[in-house]
Image (cartoon, rainbow, N blue to C red):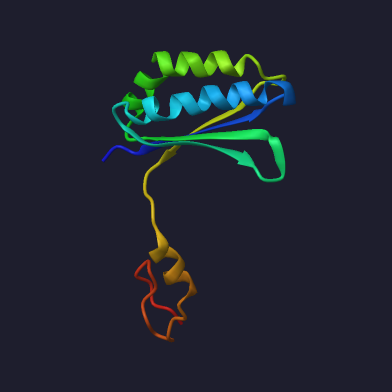
Length: 124
């Protein structure tokens, strides 16, 4: 199974360009979500610094992400990022496996001496 790709773009937006950048990103969310292989796409404002926007995407495969990076939608995003006063921080993370709430439960549930751990090792 091919690993999925998590994309994070952290942008510092000048106050006078904030509304324009936010409106552009908002207009792109649904079209990007409709692209082949897009698992999620959203934008958040940093609760401690409202000039910081975090644009997140998850892609099923590297090929799906590559198609998106060549798309008109991404070209529009690049245009909006030209309004930034500093270069955005861009990260592409490959994710081989994921876990949900069960991972929290497994770690927080006390293990009895001699029982097996989540990795199949005997707990002492």
